[in-house]
Image (tube, rainbow, N blue to C red):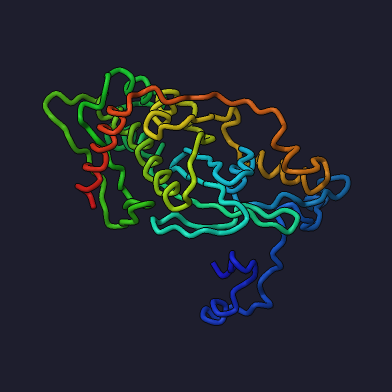
Amino acid sequence: MLYDISKLRWDEGLCALFEVPMRALPEARDCSAAFGETDLGGLLARPIPIRGVIGDAQSSLFAQRCFEPGEARITIGTGSTVMLNLGGAPRFSEGGAVTTIAWAHNGKPTHCFEGISNYSAATVEWLKNQLGLITSAREISALAAAVPDNGCVYLVPAFAGLSAPYWKPDARAAIVGLSAHSTRQHVARAAEESIAYQLRDVLDMMKQDSSMSLARVHADGGATRDKFLMQFIADMTGIEVLVSNVAECSPLGAALLGGLGLGVFSSLEQLASLPREATAFRPTMSAELVEKNYAGWKQAVKRVL
């Protein structure tokens, strides 16, 4: 938090404010630069170079090869993260997205927006562990698909408050719209749908604050194996969702960056041209029904703010 991402240097004022001596801070290098070498304490016959140093979420964006401004990826696990490539110059969000550096290569940084939802697969775990509505997380997709709609039931998973774009740490979770006709299938579907609604919240904010349009979004993470969820995300966001066949992309991103730094790959353009395997989910729901569902979500969120 002491690094000035606009000037690409440690901030003298912040270091002075928090009494952090600047001489104690490391040199900031490109993600593909040389960071030394290691033999893992003698475990290797000879030392190997250390390259491809990058944050976990940023590495996933790199692995999905979102190298151009306006390209985005979502990672869905316990929570969800959304990252949108902004290009070489930082932009700042009025809606609550965090601006950060995605990576730097050849002395040139790539900036991005980041938005986080705290509860995604964790909501499903809550249904299993706390309510006992399911015995395995794998049940959730079949239960959600067993009913034609959510029966006007919405689950707002504000168990630890709501993050982007609401930023209400004191909000608390709620299931709204229950009636005598509501079933466990409706609650299961509401839990699944809440993941997609939160992603749309963040993507809409990012599109507005960046003035960029999205034709597609790349997806990874354990929850992307859920076909019902992926289709509902495509429907709610109105854009194509390309689900990587590599569920955990962060290690891949670090490996690609390391290869770039070592000369195994010559450029980002070469990386972008490498074959990739992904499953596409395209919007199929009518615009009227999409907006009806999303309006119900927004009303449910208002109840907990």
